[in-house]
Image 1 (spheres, helix red, strand yellow):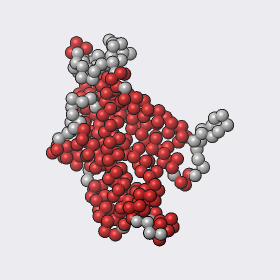
Image 2 (image 1 turned 45 degrees about the horizontal axis):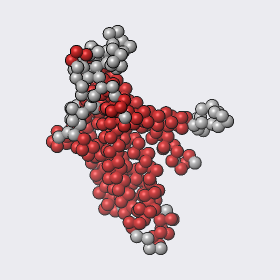
Image 3 (image 1 turned 180 degrees about the vertical axis):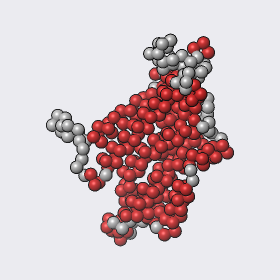
Image 4 (image 1 turned 30 degrees about the horizontal axis):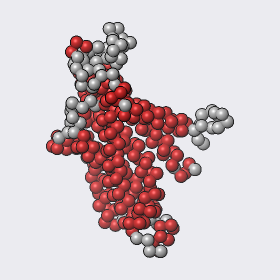
Length: 287
């Protein structure tokens, strides 16, 4: 029995569709902030004004309408830094998810299709990856190779490829014995074409669903790494770095940490809601 909202204009609206639309709206707002940051942000994210330091939000006593969400310890506008921070979070999350999808889906598809030694090797890599606490491993790698956008994306791709490999491998194992694939083999279709033309389209819906959740995971992990001081360049505004700075002022300037945390929560929630909706929409058992 599927839950649904009351009839709307004569149609039953599934809860997952409503939540999916809400998630898409949240992501669209974050994307708008990221794309239009130079226009929407009232100040440059690095603009310092020590005379305006630690101003509270506008609705709090002594708040200023010039700084709607207050300022930080050196007078930078919190709202502007949150808007510019959306660029880093979205770009890192999407790039890491795409790179992880490319690597993990390729390995999972080969493992499920070829089986044997290839499957055992990929499965061993997956087990080794899952055996390590990834955050500690990421801190070690970034401490050795240094932070920055490219190293962070590469490290986060290491965290996400396992998700794709496990899902694609399990589907490929069941697909390789299907009649349509056996028929294609019988008429002489080569292995590259089998993978590209027949198997990849079959697993693509699952890859899309996993990508939405992996992007949320990458955004959270990137914020955690920036919070620990090993993320992107500290001069670049990021939500994790804002949290790291704000934790030292929780009692006197709570807004420095609360608003970046809300931004992270909204973005991750939106990605997860969209992922749930895609999973329900593309699940063949629901059709």
